[in-house]
Figure 1 (cartoon, rainbow, N blue to C red):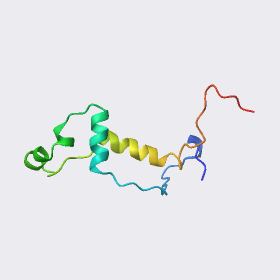
Figure 2 (figure 1 turned 90 degrees about the horizontal axis):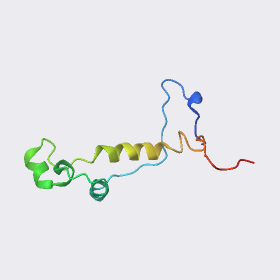
Figure 3 (figure 1 turned 30 degrees about the horizontal axis):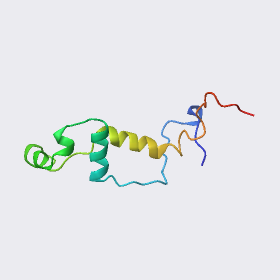
Length: 89
């Protein structure tokens, strides 16, 4: 399915994505390290277990946002964005 232009989207549009992804502890650790996020809430098991209501580290919310956007590209904007500097024939 090609992407949709903004004008083609309607209120209430629901898109079922073909791609599914499990987020692992390694994903969270690597993303936190790459983005220089030292928050114990994302990295420290002991802290999360004893000091939070969650009991385990939380996945970095920016990672989650990026993943959701990335997974949705094929059904939303793929092929609809403008490529600057590329000649169209």
